[in-house]
Length: 95
Image 1 (cartoon, one colour):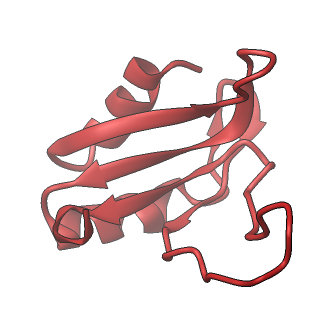
Image 2 (cartoon, helix red, strand yellow):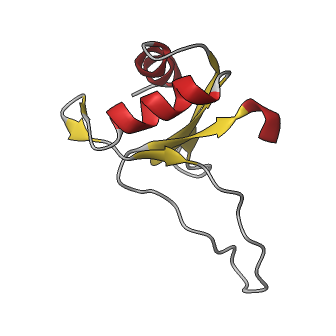
């Protein structure tokens, strides 16, 4: 799935400000997750409700509201990623 495909899926629920598929910088392949920013909170919530666990392109996706990464002092990054092929969305005012 490309960024335009991701945008089209979410545009069925409202105006999409941006869509981004996260790519591995070494392989150039998708890491299996992405982010969508929507203009309207109610439209975004409807998209989350209806798309979470939906089948897209033969795979079930997980959709939830993105949360800021917590800073921790462990080396090597940290944080969790949704490797299940889903995505999240961010409200525009958080960026």
